[in-house]
Image (cartoon, rainbow, N blue to C red):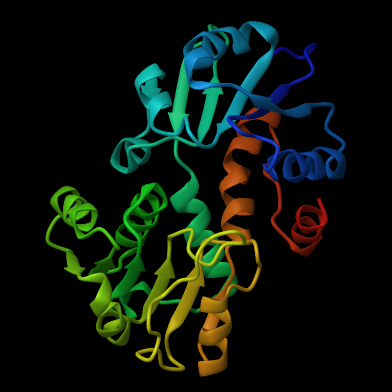
Length: 278
């Protein structure tokens, strides 16, 4: 990055109006007195490759990637990290001086850091982790849990074939359960994660029995609107330690910010409030 150039970064997706990333990065830029800008860019699929090749020429040093481009950008990148390749998606792109595209996935990092901040003594070796959902977010969560040292993942998805496909990729440490038997899976688990959009504002509720929860279970949801989903509320009433999904969004942003703007940012209560009020 040139000393004389104001660093520019942003987020690409379609739609993009809902993104909290501009408020998040804007808070950090102001907090650390960095002369940089972070902008939302609504880029459709048909313009994606052309846009990615053009952005570095406009002084953009990197972008976050959201729906629907996370998988597609992998095939357009010049270099892909191992974790992005394993997950099969990228959410953080960095452009070098020659316009080469470096693709990474920090969603799993964000998930684990949020879990550790919410439950500082969380122990991946305490027992299996039950994961609800087998979509793109699930891939990042499963990869990060295995990497953290969880020995067994119990997986249930409404469409069982998607769970079986993830088992085929991740191997014998994955055990697949029917969606209707998710309660049995939850009863075996030390950690329970909802990676589906069920329970999000505007979505159907998470129709899974939580009778298997005990006060020793750690429960987290990647949904952050509402901040406390019915899933987390029920778990809290059982006595579980619960972790909401907002911190995953905040932590996944930190590596990109550091790469683009040269400062390792802090994830704290001020940031949470800034993003919640955006």
